[in-house]
Image (cartoon, rainbow, N blue to C red; front, side, top):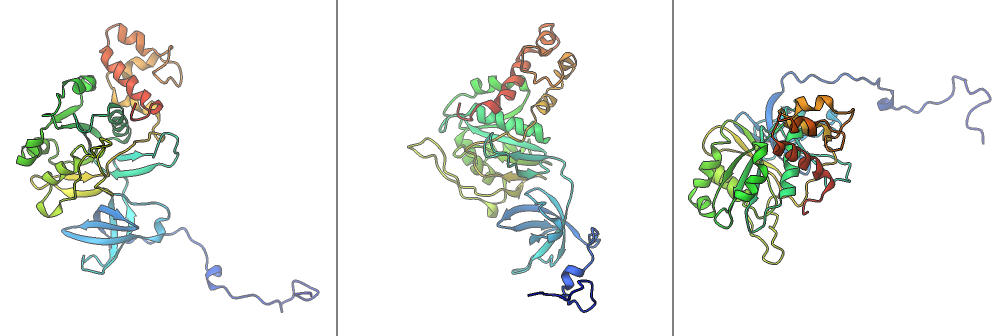
Length: 336
């Protein structure tokens, strides 16, 4: 059956009204000049808890932001009900440019990049010296992610009453990384928190570490009493810790001016997103030696000019070894 008349251009052809479809498209977005600035404290199933001045506000992301997501540490602008009262919901309409970013993938073969924390100044890598045993390859991966994302690394070694830190520190001494060594009894007395706090004042610090190393216990000692998170113990059968932190959370320091961001315990730390050529940027003393390298040199191959340059005495050979160890982390699994 013919739907229209003989002439499809006739004026009597019916057009189905569709106001939404007839609305002219535009790329102009509202400016929201009255939006208030805030900081994302945590994210839970599409709802973002933000600090706006001295108020904790629950918010959601505006549709106009598209696929762009806000993460813990992001500086955002919000509109709507900013009172922070129960059952109120604000709207995030703008996300400021990030000055640093901590990213990871599930594993080295996973192309999906996950932003864990934004705008942190440093990355505190917490590891126990025993119970559970330290995992240097996982530490290396965290360091690579820190260098790639623009964060300064800090090693926090716990449980030194169970094992000496000397061997592990020798592994990283050539990198010039700052470090803090604590004991279990120092956590209970608060002395460990005082030691670590010296490196945190005035800065935003993201804490990472595999489960059972005492990361959340340390964070609890650093933040106000009413902000504590649940802690767990090491599994006696597997020797691994139990996950107690399920989402990243930004918390203010109890003493001093600064923020700590507690992140979920790590089982792995994929580096699929990291461009190996950026790792050399964390070694400014080796950078001049790369001028003679072949194009697209990985700095871990026979023709690399760094070998001869270091052999001539321009830099410490231990630094070159450290660089290549970090570059090789993408080819190893964390438990190796």
